Length: 249
Image 1 (cartoon, rainbow, N blue to C red):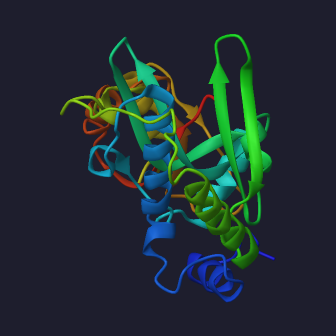
Image 2: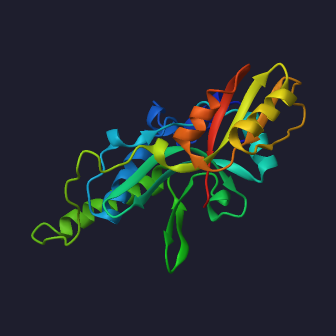
């Protein structure tokens, strides 16, 4: 069992012992595996090839127990999320990163070795596909299913796929609107919070038990990440310890 008080290194070791993470866990914990998956899903969904090197990818190795506690106070949990959506008529955005997910979301309850794909439709709303995504039996089952599928289509044409994409098909993640969870080390948390409220227009402070006097955490209002980061650079006298995006699904 993994506790939210467990260190990242201990949790990773436990996952490796149970066969849920590779001996070299880089692809798992740094988001590369999730990036490849969202590239395939986005290519199928929107009909153009999405290349991994065009997708901003951030892993979970920097997430701390403190961040988990603040997520709980916010009303949610932290999940590694791969996401893609259409932007206008001919572009998409795609990215992978840890994110705050509301307890009201169907993704919040995805635990242990389970994975979930959430599809948001204009008419259907949110639809979730859920199942085991790690371990020797689920992995072996998926491999055998792919081999059988290939064998069935040796002399048949599969009527789905995607075309190549333009160089700027995937827009910069910094131009996508989001809210940010920010955690700081500051000599004067009250003054820093006041300055943040002036810079961002508002700032929702968060609390956790046992927080040191120098710690400040809050959630920004929604804006493009580029504009939020530009304002963040003007917040003087505070050391940024954590930055996590907030989802709306």
